[in-house]
Amino acid sequence: MIKVLLAEDQSMVREALAALLSLEADLEVVAQAARGDEVLAAARAHDVDVALLDIEMPGISGLDAAAELRDRLPAVKVVILTTFGRPGYLRRAMESGADAFLVKDAPAARLADAVRRVLRGDQVIDPALAAAALADGPSPLTEREREVLRVASDGATNAEIAQALNLSQGTIRNYLSTAIQKTGARNRAEASRTARDKGWL
Image 1 (cartoon, helix red, strand yellow):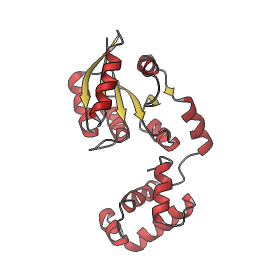
Image 2: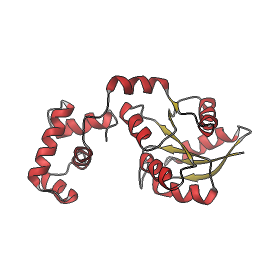
Image 3: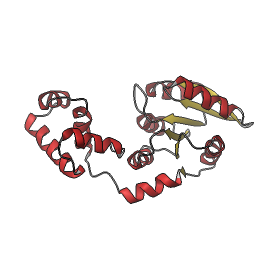
Image 4: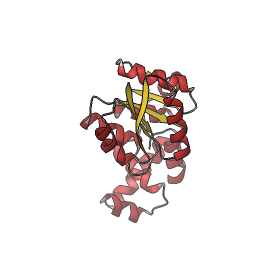
């Protein structure tokens, strides 16, 4: 029996996925989590084989939870599930150690098949997303530019961003200017929106 951990912050979606997976004779959802920062402990406590992780969760993201699992429990296979088919998310998921990346509207049979395939050592990627990621290319933003845009996207001033990231306001202005230029945006709000839409943040 394949032991599965399901991490998804929306309880209705989580319960529906658990019910669908329980129809498979060889799969058992042995643990559920509503937050990203609960994933590692739940995976450890239930000795899971595969973790199905949503990207956007409170605590830490599914991508960060995937990286934690890779570092602490490398035998656990990771399937990233997302509502947002953004090419940048796919790249970041693979960098964080995910074994599969699927959009949530994929048929349940495809999800169950992905669970079995990652245990055999396969990598499973939604084909449309793979094509889009190749066409889109890698994120042009550095890690620091992404951090600055993340904080700026909440409407923070330069002074607030500088304080949050422990940098000078001049440095923040430089990072924002470069990020705006790289995203082809007219201002910081548009740069944040573009980066988020592409899955770079």
